[in-house]
Length: 467
Ligand SMILES: O=c1ccn([C@@H]2O[C@H](COP(=O)(O)OP(=O)(O)O[C@H]3O[C@H](CO)[C@@H](O)[C@H](O)[C@H]3O)[C@@H](O)[C@H]2O)c(=O)[nH]1
Image (cartoon, rainbow, N blue to C red; front, side, top):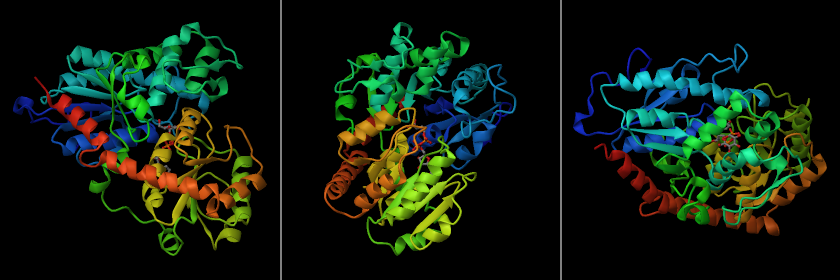
């Protein structure tokens, strides 16, 4: 049942019954919101009361989760953002990401008022790693604060390392960044680091940068971190305390898309379904570049040419504004389906016909693919995507196809990489075998007795203690 600022979520309830009430504060982008809401659903299923704090533009995503209540906060007026800016990061120009993130910190005061007005006392806060301004709120309420990462533990550690060390860094495009406290981490070239960080150093000190840095420093004060990752994938980072995370416990509860799987309602089947049903096992390439990255027109043309030349069967999800080359859909209609705007990605990846994903290396897409036994053709572009590509390459389940947000690859080369992958020959067979093994490890982790289930139990236990 939604609630506005004037009408609290649980007006007639009291946690005199000892029931915990956890407030989750997601960052308003699809790749962050969905996994945190998955976690909220899992916690609700374990008997905790859950409320998600969102702005109106993001409310429909929470409304779809019947076990999670919500408080709808007014999108904060901001001097950092131009008028008319949307309420989530979809279609947000890259240079506005940092001001957008900093603006959300203004939600702290209304959220505190809401918390104080609740008959059912808020007993803990789980906050996205981009909304660490919730830490002082938790302090004021005297409740535990947990930082949630929708991404890998490796990214959690390296991003906090960057913000901690930031004042000593230079703006040097040739610099290489090592992470000595993150065992086995590669040295990343400057261009492979998140824009969130790179723009800070380029921009120097300002209010936006200070706010973002403080958000990351507050995260380090949390009582623990929770990540949508798995010991089956990041063994080294999950078990031992990491200095870059202030030695705090990291609970790896993923893959969350798998953990919620048994309780999910049956998916709406896309038009592509009958066609997938008729396709051979592992023969189809699913193509998606996530929710943040709009491809340049030349990149769209390149992917289209590559798919046409490869002779591979494909499902390509494109944004509504994407203009495909004239004649492309007609020419490939016998072996390809284009889905506009939104596809039920997890369900498509789980279809036995899908063997590969061509991905921008967003964490959710890679984890969902791995959990479904789908191998990856990787094209990392921005944010944590280079690190994600590295991590899954270490597991031997990827074939690199391109890299860089502005790169326009050679369509012929791309086509032959796709063709070799789906031909089920040589190394591509080994890659497919390894990803199927990894999917078994990820499934075992969320099953009874698995590492992710144990970490979720530990989180439930911690949150249930409302004394
Ligand atoms: O048609 C679609 C398109 C996407 N999705 C889902 O949307 C999510 C997309 O997430 P992700 O693959 O992580 O990509 P982004 O949306 O680009 O995610 C942002 O957030 C991630 C988590 O922090 C980062 O790893 C990425 O780099 C960052 O771009 C996944 O769960 C997909 O299943 C759909 O269900 N249908």
